Amino acid sequence: MHFSRIKTSDLLLLDANDPETLSGPNAPDPTAWGLHGALHRMCPHARVALHVHSIHATVLASLADSTLPPIDQNTATFYNRVAIDDHFGGLAFEEEAERCCSNLSDPSKTVLVMGNHGIMVIGQTVPEAFNRMYYFERACETYIKALWTGQPLRVLSDEIAEKTASELESYPGQADQHLSELMAILDDEGSDYAS
Image 1: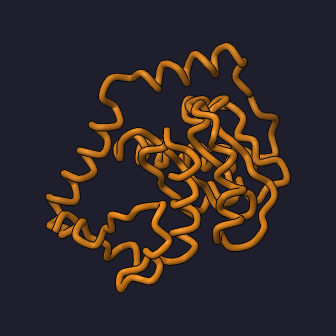
Image 2: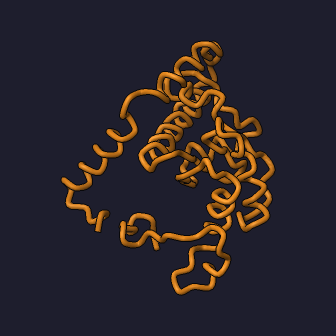
Image 3: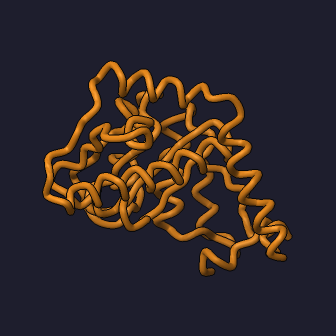
């Protein structure tokens, strides 16, 4: 099913510890099962996980140095909160998925840059994980476009980058409000995502 057609009623509730899930009539894609199942088995602190191959984050994942330097507020949001896996080993079936997800065992890491692949973002709630994914893509876009200029980057100090990241992590209700507003826009447009 194409992502643009997925509705609430299409979501599956699966047990990451039940390998029989793959033999059921509504079995998930084996790589989705591998990646998300491995993450939930290995990282119980990750209540919500979103995996995407968004353009700018995937460009970052394709660079020899996939570090995201704090050059603005959005990039500073992720200061010291990103794990980088630079050992792409093919599709994320069980073995590859477990290797990738082991990078998120540290609860302070909330984004995994999967080298030559995409990203995995985790959170405690859907709004938190979505907000993180949205702003990580925006941060990557800013960084990639800054690189295009060929000009030296103005990188924030470690102190200011950490201060910014901490302030944004504790910003009251921001993630919930962000997702709520996006859903209101979809509702106004007559979307049937909630059916």
